[in-house]
Length: 162
Image (cartoon, rainbow, N blue to C red; front, side, top):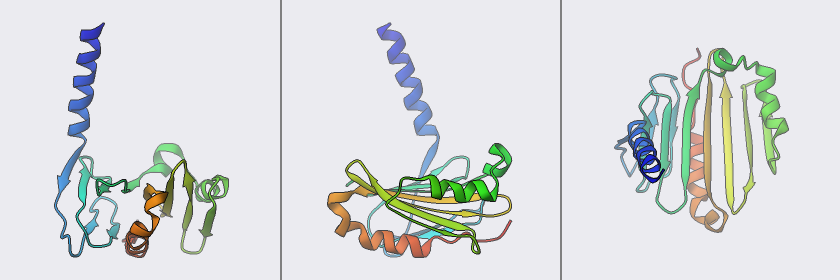
């Protein structure tokens, strides 16, 4: 049994290292453009580790102190039959402390607390894809990450229309 658990752990480790590749960004002006879905995201200057999913869906950004930002595109309409109404319902159904739904520009924002962390999610709906940015960090470090969140929110653009 112990050998089987070790083998399973080794396979999972191998698979987890195969699903993302570290990419380099300019620490003075960090940004990322996703070719597959057309979105762009820019964030506050600093030293971050940035990993791009091998399937081209998006990135994960972390700083080693508790900040994690994930930005990705998905084909929820095709895979799950997500309608625009369903999309907005996600925001309305969330137990977030803060939420905004903008139907004319086809996006929503939800934010709140999850345990000792603060989370922020912004998602765009297009005719063919959903693009989402999720940021989570320790609430105790809120003042440290305020500028990061502000820059990322301003710099997250859905790009081309599908």
